[in-house]
Length: 81
Image (cartoon, rainbow, N blue to C red):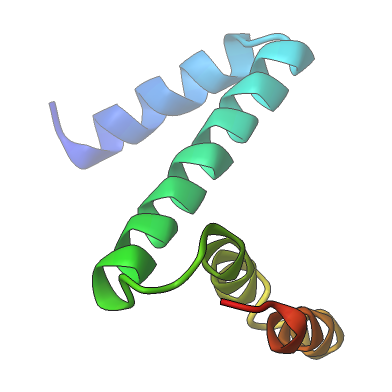
């Protein structure tokens, strides 16, 4: 199967999903992404608290949103270890 065939099959399956299935699949993919980012952060900074890891994950996810980054950084500055 070529990349194009795989892409076409993916698109066919995506179009066959109900809106609820699409939302569920997207939510699962976001959860997986957050877990992967958290795992990398924990590997690099093992002494961070769960709250700090959560906020660092949010920083990564929203890094292109300056207003959101500022809010997250403010929260990080208030988190005690």
